[in-house]
Amino acid sequence: MKASELRALTKSELELRLKELKAELFNLRFRKVTENMNLTHRFKEIKRDIARIKTLLRENELGIRTIAGGKNG
Image (cartoon, rainbow, N blue to C red; front, side):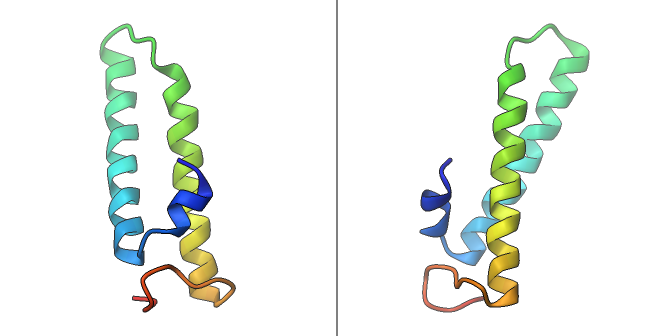
């Protein structure tokens, strides 16, 4: 997901997306151990999306950039 797409989300939507990505990463790690899988490129994508979301949340916390949706919380 692109950073510009993430900036259009509200804080609660970002936090929800972060939870979903962390769960997906956990499931991929579990599947990697238990079965032969060809989705290794997905690990990198998920980790980058998690980093982007955390960066946007931190920027909002520091007042560098506000999150869409008007209110910061």
